[in-house]
Length: 112
Image (cartoon, rainbow, N blue to C red; front, side, top):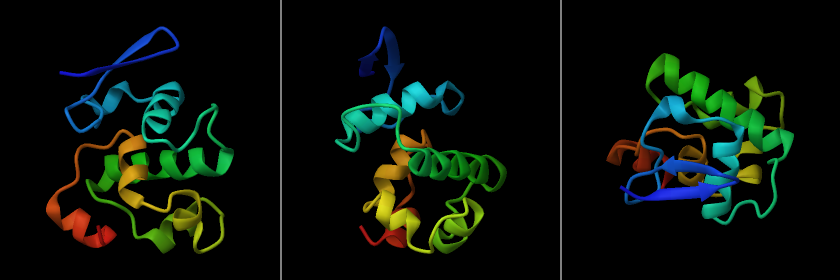
């Protein structure tokens, strides 16, 4: 099992870089995952990005699904295209949010 080392932490991920345990996520872990994905060279992530990630996590925790992107933006009080503006590839946002590897249906929803 691969490990990402970041600011003295060891973060366990699977072979594709998805966080092994949902409950291991925090803002520092998000920074490490974002850096690994080439999203952010410095942390903290912007407030807008972090709000999106936190909402995705809460929604997933409650519904075991990805939120409708327009609803995501409304709930974090950002413009309707916020998800694509902040994360052009939603599957990368999914990974940085520490969610489990998406199913083929989720990839289909993302259009990737």
